[in-house]
Length: 350
Image (cartoon, rainbow, N blue to C red; front, side, top):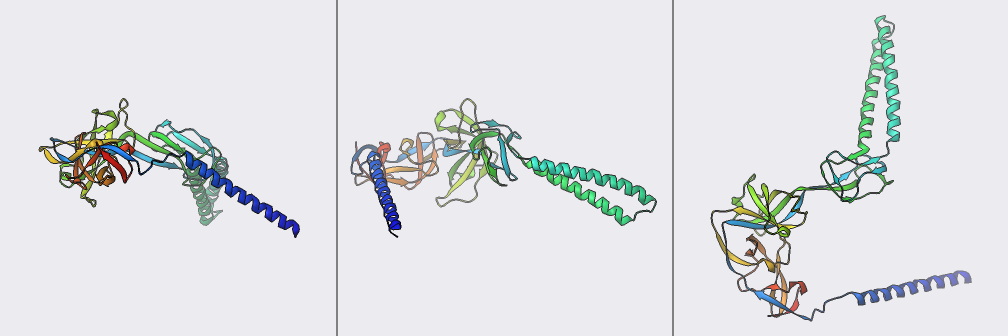
């Protein structure tokens, strides 16, 4: 009893020591993490939205997405005996990505093939005997059914054998390898993620005013922010028929990538469309934008505070962004110094 008590006290002491050590490490780590003092006043530049004329070529902000992106899974289960690719590899359609152990299936196929050969020999013998009325029709039909059953079984095994070889369903780049050599995997287990960016999808939100200017099959020009004024050819593939809460419609274009000016999935871009009329609308400078093109945000100064504010964006000409809703002409928008801000930061304007 005394021994049990001593062991219990010793274990309790270890637990207490570990807890104290963890708390000490947490406090030490916290002292090394830089946190901006929310009471610090940040000097920023601001400007108010103003009316800007967007000329006949309308531009809409968006983001590029991979045209094809999929997790390539195994159709069957088994042990992974080879992986022929690594992350970053370019693969072609039909190229072998990985291989599962197929030894047992090959043995089963060999057994079934021997069985088929035996049944065929039996059928030849029974066919001769049938002509002499030595065997009945039912005996012959039973053997014939056995042959057909074995042939079906062989086809099933051949399909299983084919499934042990995992091939790329389309050309692309291996962006993730999800299993390791020697892993036991089940049917449906993803092996790699394959991404095709030879063409990309550029998705934009179009206000109600402009949606009827888009037609499926219509040719457009696109730009990627990272490549400046370089243009890319594309075609409209999707025109939404249902508006979101802000009365914007989804439009999607397929854009051909370039080897020289490469676009990666997730990069920001814009879609340009020829238009017969100019648009004069309340706008802000694009350099004020801090959110993504799908969720545009800016900092609005109010009572010495920077308030992170969502707004609905319309057309853009690369320098200015149209305001559909969410901001007014009286708002003071931060155009310089956003990198030092967070919501409700104290600010002072130049």
